[in-house]
Image (cartoon, rainbow, N blue to C red):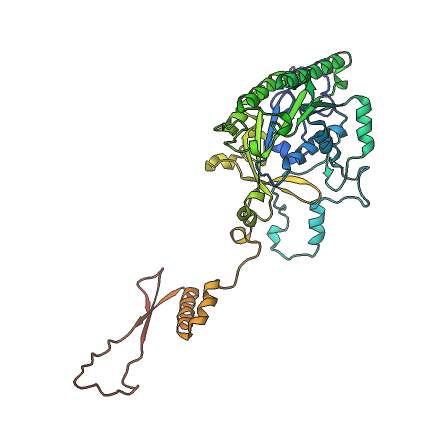
Length: 457
């Protein structure tokens, strides 16, 4: 019998509802954003006490609102308190447009099917391949979406948030709105007033949790859509940075997670505010004052990229990820999509993987970026170039030249034509015509590039 025994705690308290312990620190909890692939990019989820900033520079799309809806829907499923900061009307529009759990109350008709099941149903015909490849797994570009009712659920974009759920969370006091366009004493609310109200809400949550057990404590989700938009008034760049820095200090040591999205005109690197001043290196400043900053660059503003990557809707660029209680961000060591923890990646000296996102009929997913067939064309091109077809119009001479050229390329041999010199004619006595039998046939010399010493006459 061994004399060494593992020391166990007398009583281990479970994590708050809808959270789990982070893989890097046992003193820190994390929650899900509602998108399993985004959780993987962050490490394994968003740490409590962190501020995550999302940038969407494309003005023709609304990816920021879609991510906010995933974030809100995940909190509603787990019955976690929510706080929406912004104009009340626009916040209610975002809330009512949320999706719901696959096969839930808001589902329409038949039971939803995952995208993987749809793809497998399309390819039911057996394909004969080499026996050594039959047992190999299918090539995956994203993480497995395993539904977990206690942390991250699977949502279906074809379903709608039931109205009964909104009425239920409103009656329980788990839904709070902070209207930034409301006036106090005849003046517009300042960012300091909004921070004071957020701090009051967090203190009230802590007072409620201190009177109950730790298991009954529920983390607060704060959603701030379109920070710095028209509803916020005329805010300068330094004012927005001060707001983010103060908000980060307020939620740093509390059971609160914040998701912020910026409007398109503030998601570029050099935005111009209404005062006429522009902020240089704006994205780097946002990544510094917030715990995490990620850009979702859609192809709506650049059709050339859309034709190059037809399977994706945009690119994902990670500027910073949360690193609470650790010097190295959790995303660097636990993210499968970024690939920074791969031993082969370190051996080759490469960086992180290129990431892209796409939205199917039923879900939003982040994947590793890959080129399609023939460098971005969905169909393989086997026909000759268009220029060859155009050369047929210029006569049979050009056509013969192109045929000889293509034959030489296909055979791997270069053809050289040797012609005999034509005798010079004088004006005094024209040369008599010679019969065709007197001319020698043209010689053709072929040589192989890999064997220059061998000639074929």
